Image: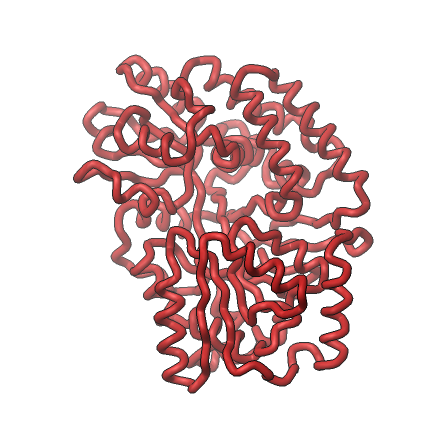
Length: 448
């Protein structure tokens, strides 16, 4: 599998949370950084209570406390970020946090508010003599590195691709497309049957960026083209691979292969169209089954597929997108050692495997994937194992405002308001504004 690496441009730092940055420096100076004395009786862990809940972390904390004599307390909430942010601003953060997708973790890193964990990764993993860092998939671990230093930690991760209903395809005699040319033929067949070939979560353009635009930039121009876009290289967003990817999206739209009204649909509305067989395919991450399980018709199946690729493109046809929501230890935490030990426990082989079985997702810990995965995960797992190039949309976290703007421009493309060339020019103009903004730290994406 491919490896991912990320580096930050030292010369450009995000200006913000200055008081926090200064307070963190003071705390490190007084306490000696990661070796600070444990001063709080309770070790606070604040977690995003999303689709996987908080019960696993709570049960693990109870078990950890019984084994070690520690007092780890887990606090979970769907908007835990609204609690973490003011706590960090006041210099009294939790000891460990998984703040969720709304929290700008990289800004916290830039502001010096996140503990550097490279030394901890050299320590033994929980219940093992193996260095902790060696128990993780290195491609996923590197997603949390800046200039070779580890700040953000992976836990569970998702894969992003497309889904289809294998029973429906078998009934209709349809073949799962591996190439874009095959996709066009299939879409014609599906449309002729009276069904929408593809639906999408139009209220959230992220799904189309991740499911079509980026994979097709990569397929057309190789990882170099996609990396250039993430790195904000001049002209990258107007390059031939970007224009070609936009043409593919626009072609599917113009041929009537997208479900009518999809641009106005929420994620659950579009996904309901898919599971109820009003659309044959949908771009989504491996959380789809868990998110829709309660409303799925009895016996309904789904399988994961890669976005169809170009036969004449430069990209790796096995390339696969991964998505991680990180955990971290705040620099101003009072109980860093216990927090790290608890996270070591959470990422032990036993606990990681248990999380996969209970929550139905993948873990960044090596060897944590059981052989008896359910079909919707097994199909994704097979493609993950076979992939020689894993990649991540790291610019989504690095430049969230820019990413949102690109999403809005993608919607204009989907609405037929822009030509592919106009799309590229408009995104490139926004990229130039970001390049010129010296208040925003710049990062470097590379794949090796």
